[in-house]
Length: 515
Image 1 (cartoon, rainbow, N blue to C red):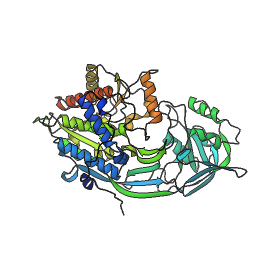
Image 2 (cartoon, one colour):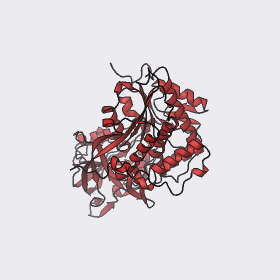
Image 3 (cartoon, rainbow, N blue to C red):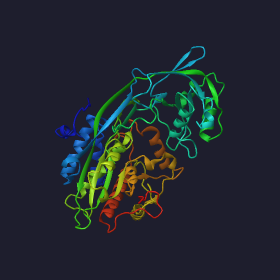
Image 4 (spheres, rainbow, N blue to C red):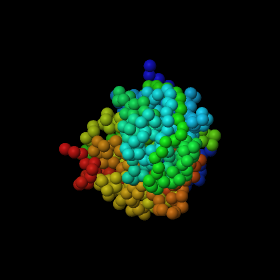
């Protein structure tokens, strides 16, 4: 029986929740930025409970967004004349209660690994209830590294560095070698986006379309690098040296670990629904109003998870409540002042679970697919320092990049292509599904120069706040930079919506639709 805790329709009745008790808006001079931050405070207040996909908190937040869109004069663009687009999801969760993982030495000594703090596992319906197998260190998990892994749990470096085996390759190689499980050890030297522990939870949430899990019941785990000495104790190998070799891409030894991994996994499953919020600003031009510019941002966050420094609520202020606020402010600024093209405000869900809402929308568009001229997506934005450099996703792939360059330059902002492709940010946010169906799309990241204070703030945010409870309304902010970005975004959306020509992929772009 599907589980549904609170519908968005029901939540509309209680959408007017109290604002956060200690607003910072008095310190913000610019009225538009002040109004924007008030929205961010509201959507990421504790009352919204972190807006986890399909949760009552998410439904309350969505209902509140709908009320703001109504007040701004938008029209519903969801299913059946409504404001939402709902789709089924299936969840598997590995419960902390009932899950135990330990390393058992040859003499029977058992060393526990703390779930979500030392080790986590990819959730799947058919994850085995128990695992008991010897361990083998297999470096990068290349095929040649796994020659002796049959019947064992393979232990590999969890690197995302260019030219090394990817996570998907490691899983495939370990399965092909006959391993019964995989442990991937985090790379503490990958400071571009460092590992973060504890993990919020071990959950997989996917669109319930009947597609089986590609990995089946194969256990895929991640190990905190700090726990590696306990895993390889008695092997004669030095954990620090192994991690350094792995980070540097140097050849690491292949060896059997004189211990077994024992695990008990408690998996629960449930089925429910998730909802996008979709609203339309009809265009004013007789010829262009049939074309639609999409502006997207994700409303979902992480909800409740493993506590960090005593706080277990992942509010998700900058990821991505604040930028749903930018869409709301854009709509309010244009109340009674439509643009030439129509504008779709797509507030999507499930981004944190794998771009679920945007993937569902492009597969089941509620507007004519051919009418979509572009998507401008808001995510991955961290206004922590002055905005002098802006990374623009796929900047050289479509004419959107040219428009963004010109408008940013007018504000004294330099633009660049993604300088950190190892992070794969292009495919990690909601512009990506639009690109996959041939719609020109882009997203934005506050850029940094190496060795600057801005870079230090940026890296610190990823170490201490990204996907953590500390991404809340009390975090350090540069409100002038936030306002500068919003003004850039408003100008970009207005320019694209009013331009005589629709955006287009550039000749030779890999994203040009194939005939």
